[in-house]
Length: 96
Length: 208
Image (tube, rainbow over all chains, first blue to last red; front, side, top):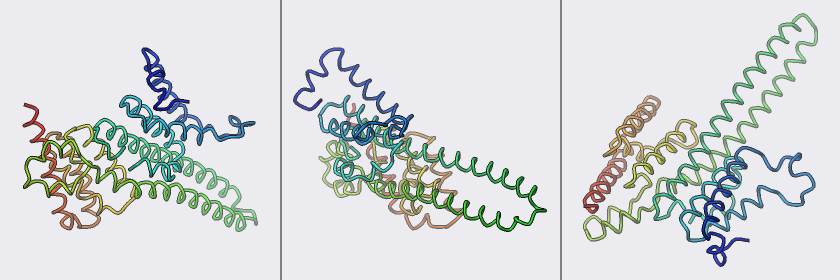
């Protein structure tokens, strides 16, 4: 789990570029594919889109411009696939 | 993020809205094409079945199906409309703290900046993204055009980017064709336009 406590460690050296790219790729994948389809999410006890949304949203609060831009971009792509996330309270709170 | 001090973050947030609206537009176009194809198919089938006695019953079923498709479209468009109504105020009333800190030494201008706007940005990319969102919202008819007019008027007097002026003028002309309401929001629009020019002027001044 990445948070403000271990962010320096996660972002050390070349890991930073890989981590940021991974976040963007997650966004692109969510824009392209619907991960809550039965064929993909069969057997899982959680919803992939909701879980991704929560994890990405937890990264927004970390004060690091590169990370915030990547996360915001990924969240935008996720919300293109699932616009109902835009109307959620958590998004509204983070909007302030 | 929409109220962030950082222009880059605001730009990304605006781009997200832009891509969302673009995607919605694409989906609507695809659905319309599908509907057209289905209609053509049904018309062909109907012409084949014209002689049969069941023709009347078939027509009723088709009407019911068309109603359901219309309902589905309403749900999608009402969702995007709700989203835009929720965020449009934020898009149009973003804080421009960077500009404010630059300008706070001039007390007489301070009152002007209570009225802040996403379009009042020193970055051309942010202004471009903001206008793009506003134009897409207008084209898709997601909110009443009155709320968009101040931004469009300000964009039509953009101090630096001529393409913004042209596209804003075009959209305003389209709105004016349908209803003559531009004069209602003219004052607010002019204020926004002036603030945009001021912000760019002071940015250039302080950058020396």
